[in-house]
Amino acid sequence: MPTALHTRCSRTFRITALAIAISLGTSSCATVDNFAKNNSANINCMAGGAAGAAAGVALAILTQQNDKAIIGSAVVGAATGCGIALMYKDRLNKLEQLAREENLKMQLETLQTSGSTPSAAPEDAGIVAQIEDQGMFPVGSSTLSSDGQRQVRKLASAFATQSDQPQNSAILVVGHTDATGSAQGNQQLSERRARAVASILVEQGIARERMYFQGAGASRPIADNSDSLQRGKNRRVEIVEVNDRNTLVKRVNAEQNNPKYLAHGTSTEAATPVSSKASTSSASTKPATSKGTAVAKSTSSTSSSSSAAARVHKGNVIDFGGQPAIVSNWTLGQAITPKSGGFAIISTANAADIPMSSCESDKPRQSGEVFNLASGKALETHTTTDYLPGYNNRVWAQTVNGHLVTISPVSILRDAAAVDRQPFVEVVQNYDAGNRKAQVKANAIANTYEGEDRVLYRVFVTNPQEPVSCLDVVFSKGNSQATDGMLFYPKSNGEAYSARFIPVRT
Image 1 (cartoon, rainbow, N blue to C red):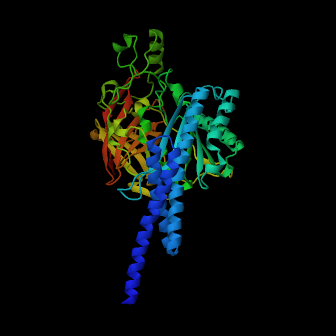
Image 2 (image 1 turned 90 degrees about the vertical axis):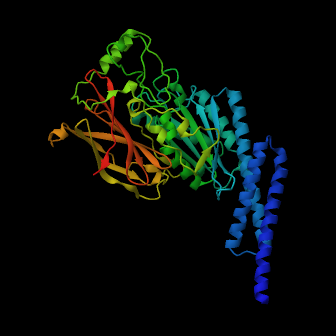
Image 3 (image 1 turned 90 degrees about the horizontal axis):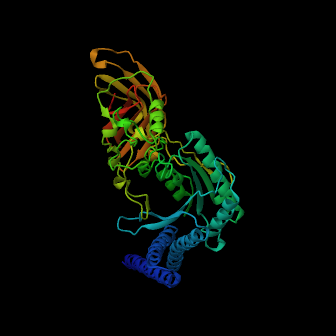
């Protein structure tokens, strides 16, 4: 009996100690918050303090420390969580001031991760600063201009305060370009630019081991590439600071196939002519999306005519029984709802609310690996090579207006729904009439966009003279089934048509 009573009292004391420790942690956090500039920082600080206190206590209990040590661990944990919230607030204040001083176009966001339980408050995980390249780099160059060097050094100063750098924090510099030029060339240029910026951050006092860089090329557009007045917004440098390396891996995977980047395509062509009658108009029109994205208009009939001439399809033409893509209502992207959990970026719209463009207004996207500046080694972002169930290099096919269209292999990894093997597209013309000889076997490039329960699998045929130009297929992640899809193909005059295509696994 005495032993049982002692155990019960000991447990009670430990719970009480936890409650007191959290109270002490958040109280000291509130005192520090007197120096903060707004209530949001106070809330984040208190949430971070509570989360830090809980983490400190959990570690102390797991390591079987005494009650005094448990209280101490909670207070230290609370102070750490509070300190991180205030550190990021300080970073944002410095960056806002710098943007005003240098007249920079800068977008600032706060990264948060879901709490440890469904009812827990989100926890601060980092910040993102995207700086538009307004002469930071000369065209086609990875050497910073004199203005660019000054601006990057000032940016570095916002991240280089030694006293508030978490020991395990990581900083990632991502280079972005517009879509002019080749996807491979843009990726390589953006990678060199990201490395140049990361090197200057190191010169200003940030540990080289903390620095990572990546070239995303034109794969993550935030503006319309087909509008010469808008595409410059895509030329930017992104600096991300996160709590630790594990959080960095989560951030990289979350961005790799993020459906929010479907809002804009990577095609620089302003329009698809719809008919000889429509081409007499001086205005050129882009294929409609679910929200009707606006595009720049052609300035003369001469440019419209030359564009139409460039689109003439000289290869084999197959009638898939569709309609002009310009009148199709492409809504497949609306099925790709954002993933729950993981990262929440403050003030960013949900993917379901974003107008999205079809593959016909897009091109293959290429993003590079993330490298550590100190070691030169690539960051390991995939913990497994397992496939999503049913997408382990299988053949998917369906007839469209009597013609058999096959995608093989469909190869989608479980981690971030990444493409493992690139497919080819095969067409057997007049399959329903008894023909079994494939007329087309075309190489292709696939991109994926991952949502909570579905994946958009986007396939581009590499040869523009093939009878199929691209395909969009929505796959379910849970039951190995295509739920929707669309095939795009050219007429002889270059006009783009689309037909419904929902393949089945064979």
